[in-house]
Amino acid sequence: MAPDPSRLAINQATVRPQWTLAQAIEGFARQNVRGIAVWRDKLAECGVEEAATMLRDHGMTVTGLCRGGMFPAADAAGLQAALDNNKRAIEEAHAIDARCLVLVAGGLPEGSKDISGARRMVADGLAEILPFARSAGVPLAIEPLHPMYAADRCCVNTIGQANDLCDALGAGVGIAVDVYHLWWDPALEAGIRRAGKERILAFHICDWLVPTTDLLLDRGMMGDGIIDIPRIRGWVEATGYDGFHEVEIFSKDNWWQRDADEVVTVCRERHGTVC
Ligand code: ZN
Image: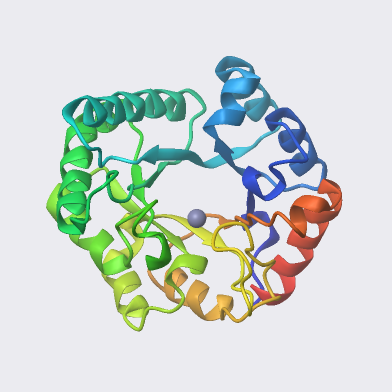
C-alpha cells in the first residue's frame, strides 16, 4: 500500500546548500510537506525564536533536531564540553517543539583504539543528559549508523545495540530507524519488533546506491538504489508506528546540485511510488 502523503517529512539536509531554514520551511510548505527535521547550525543562523514562530505559522511538525551526541572524548574537559553541548541541543529541541533530539553517538577519541571504551562513554553520556531531557520533555533518539562510520562518527552501529542502550537507560530514550544505516542487518526485523512503537521515534528514508562513491555524501533518492523501503516500512509500521517518513539525503554531486523545489517534488513523487 502506498504511504499516506501527509506522512512525508524532509530533513533539511536534503537541500542543505540550496536553502536556509526559513527557505526550507516555506519551500516544503509550498508543496504541502508538513514535516521537517532541523539542523542546529541552520537553526542558529535563523534564530531559535524566529524559527519557532515560522514553524508554527506554517503548520510544520519538527520530526527531529539534528543533532546531539558525539560523547566520547580524550579527556574530562572534552567529555564535559560534549555534555554541555547536548544540554543546549535539548533546550533548542524544546524551543522548536521537536519530536526528538537525534543523537549521533560519536566515534573513537583521537588516538584511541578502544571501541568498547568509546561505547561506555556513549552510555555514560546518555545517562548524564537523560534527566535533563526528561524534564524538558525532549525524547532522545539514538540513531545507529552504518558500521563504516564506527571510527569517526558513531560507535552505535546496529539496532540491537541501540535497543540494549534503551533497555539500560529506561524512559525518555528511543531510536531513529534509518534505512540507509540499517538495511543490511539480518537482525533488523527482529530489532524493529523489539524496539516497538514506544521506542521508534523517527523513520528516515533514502537509498543505497551501487556503487556508492562517497561514504558520507552520496546517498540516493528513494527508488534509485537497492534498499527495499516498503518492506522495512512495513516492519516499522507493524509496531504501530504512525509518525513521519523523513527523507534524509546527503548528496553533494547530485541532489545538492539541483533546484531545491525540484528536489522536493521528486521526494513527493518517490514517496508515493517506491516507499
Ligand atoms: Zn538518519
